[in-house]
Amino acid sequence: MATYKGTKGFTIQTIAGDPPSPILGQVWYNTTSNVLKGYLTVTGAWSSGGNLNTGRASSAGAGTSQTTGLCIAGHGAWPLAYVDYNESYNGSTWSEENNLNTARYSQGGCGTQTAAITMSGYANAYPMKDETEIWNGTSWTEVNNVLTGRKEVKGCGTTAAAILPGGNLPPSFSPVYAALNESWDGTSWSEVNNLTTPTMSTATLGTQTAAIMAGGYTGSYVGTSYGWDGTCWTAGNNLNQLRANTNAGCGTSTDGMIVGGFIPPYAAQTETFDGTSWTEVADLPSGTYDGSVASNSPSGNSLYVGGQAAPAAYNNLTEEWTSGAQTVTFTNS
Image (cartoon, rainbow, N blue to C red; front, side):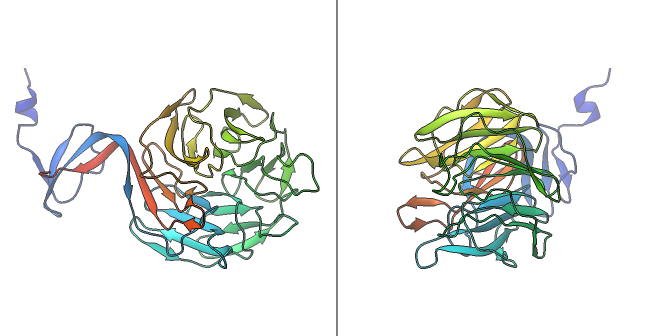
C-alpha cells in the first residue's frame, strides 16, 4: 500500500521560486529568495502600504488586487480643495498618471487599473458635475454624461456595464437624498428602478446585475442593506454598525466588504458580506471616513486609501487587506 512518506517523503520541497498552484497546507523552501514559505489560510488583517503622493478624501477607486489599484480625484485641505489627480499602485508605490479632464470629488467610480470609469461628483459649486470619463490605462476620455448630476455616490461595475444609485442632489431638488438609479451600457446612461429609500453616502459593490448597497444617510445614519438583481432592489440583512460616507465598498454580492465611514465620529470597523449576512472583522488602525477602496477583491487582497481622520486632516495612507488562502513567509518571530 502506498504511503504519503513513500510518495512525497517528509523533506520540505525546494523550489527556485513559488509553485504556480500550491495546495492548502503546502510548505516549500524558495531558493530564489532564500526563505521558507507555505500556503495557508490567513485571518483577515490590515497592514500599511505605500503612501499616496497627495493625501485626499472622497476619491473614487478602481483595481483588482493589491498591486493594481487606482485612486481617482478627490479633495484635500484648502486651498487644494478638489483635484483632478490620478494615481496608480503597484503593490508598494503610488505613481502619478495623467489627470482627469474634470476635477471633482464625491463622485462614483469603478473598474480596473487599466479600464476604469468615474462619473458625476461635485466641485464646490452648483450644478453638480454630470461628466462621465473613461480611463484606458493611459488617459481619460469624456463620454456621455449621467442624466442627473449628484455627489456622495459610489458606482459599481465596469466600463461596459455599471450602475450609479442614490446620492445627494442640489438644493433645487426635493428631497436632497436621491432615490435615482442609473445604468451604464458602455455608451450612455438610462434610468432604471429607483432605490426603496432615497439615500446618499452609501457603500455600493458588485456588478451591474448583482449589486449590494449598504449604509448611508437618509436624514440619520443607517445600517440598511439592499440587493440589486438587475431589475429591482430588495431589503437584506443590516450592517452591524450604522454608518455613512463609506465610499469604501468592494467585492461581489456574495463576497463583499465595506470599510470605515462616519457614525459619527469616525469608524474603523470592517465588515464582510457572504451573500446573506454582515460580519465584523479586523478594524482599520484608526477611524477614517471618505476613503476609497482601490481594489475590488475583499476575500484576497484589497486596498483602503486616503480618507479623512479628523477635521482638515486628509490621509495619504494606504492600508492593505489580506485574508483567505495566501502564500506566506515563515519567520523566526
